[in-house]
Image 1 (cartoon, each protein chain N blue to C red):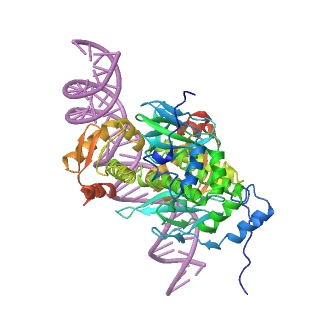
Image 2 (cartoon, rainbow over the protein chains, first blue to last red):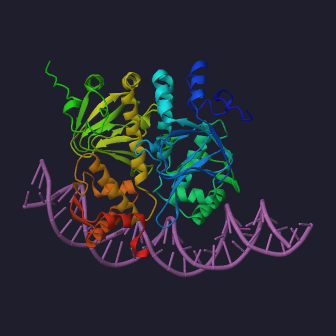
Length: 236
Length: 236
DNA sequence: CGTGCAATTGATCTAACTCAACCAACGTGG
DNA sequence: CCACGTTGGTTGAGTTAGATCAATTGCACG
């Protein structure tokens, strides 16, 4: 019996964002019992492959992930990033297979939540039902928050603001964070080249909007950033 | 009592795609009873406004809709199109308000499905639960199917293919259809200008890939279109 | 029968891409 | 411990895909 005891939702840093929200002690322990197993991945390691049979949702316990497919010309197309307390995998329900690869951006851990099991549990626990839909809605909102077909400057500004609000959501500083993403990840997600991303970051730095040291980033002027993003003021 | 009798799921053309899938007679009648009311809209009429309080999902009975927001500079940013048997509105759950305007592209009808009521019903009807999640997953998949940051040609080709498979899904011809969208709608969704869209359509026509007469469109060579979508042909 | 909107096509212009050089940090093996 | 390749990031110069500006046509409709 050398197996490491399964970590519980009770001592999980993401519990206040994730499925346990609104559940009582007993319900959380049911949820816990249902989680198939936790996966710990190193930077660059892959969790899911395109066309893998859909079986489960995944919740990020710590770290971060990206989903991506390969274009016909071999270039990576990034579809989304997933941070602490966010769920992913439901894109696989309709076709019963995952429509993308998923890999870890840094040392990370996810909880695997078998689809059939949670479908059963939500029938007994209405508040779990609501929280699951809320987390799915969150994913839609995240995707909506970064227009990927406007001017490059707008895209990057909107992307940084979106990251900011997601980090804030997970209890971290909304203005100072270490990006787990490379410039290439950002570029691929936004549909730009690394050079353009790099130049824009320099531009924002020179405009006193952000401070940058490699992956370490500090948003100094959110209002200016919103103007760069060309968003209606009340959007954030 | 001059009110028009509410139309039932039973005689709805979209029933085989929509929430009733997998439900028995009794369950469908419960679902029916729950639908708040049907809205009939003319072309251009709006159903939802940005920041409206979230209360309901909507299912397209016939016709089509688009969701959009206005940029700071007043230009319309289109987020999605919704066709027969597709659901929309769940983007509003997280923030308890809709993050976009929704308006009809042609004479259309939607069923309003109050969130609290359906949350109750899915607890009693597990297969409704599954179908709801499947329809939400469908939305994710649709959004994934059209990359909006590749070359213009790839975007338009992928978009046409995505339309094709959605029309097929709703029992219509996958190769011959009348677009309810204007060139401007397509351009705004894909992040292009109408001129570029128009030129590409001409290019596809000249390449014998499609036939076009205004909004009437015929896909003549799906394989070629897939090549256009995956990779610009002239790169070979 | 004009007025206005949607679409097409042509001529220029520019934002972002490509190609290229360079630097810094890091790990690995001799 | 240093030499070296590798990976990630920045910056510059020239090129191009798609935007902008502009003119024209066709069609719908009051």
